[in-house]
Length: 207
Image (cartoon, rainbow, N blue to C red; front, side):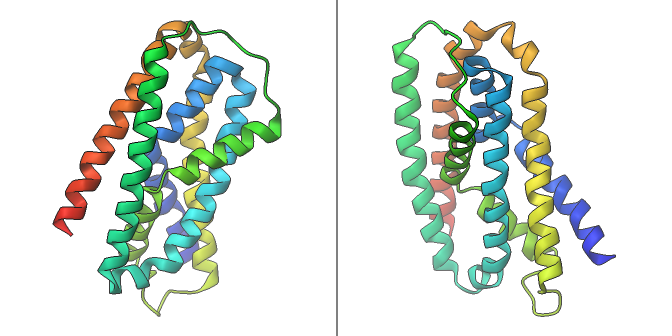
């Protein structure tokens, strides 16, 4: 019963956390535009696999992170470096300003790996799920068992995948404005990285 309650709460939190435009879901949308709906779906699947692992790590690290604030600083600094690199990359891609051409599908394995790589570069889910784990009292010895951990990880992954699938599902609307979308999406991604950099710097200074 507790596992079911936990599952739905974490599912909702993961779904809402991924729903706003971000690194992973924008990558899914871009893949749908550039390579087709099928490849976009496999990118979402790859991202879901990594998010499952990230949620599992978050639960296991919850107690340790709350007891050791300097670990949180290390994670934030690592994220700062990654966001800076990605920001520069997307800005360079945007300046190229190439006309969008639909490409051949790149293969299931390649698209899944792409989704896994993008999700792995996005470190924000780990502290996000750590905070949720702490709120749900999973960081204490009372509820810290494998049934709760499994329910938490599965809920986080499935909730995130559902949100990503919405981007694939509404691909047809995106496709109608494919050229315009691709033209500005890299600028949007670069701006998003800048916002994440600012947020990360603030969090590092405040911590």
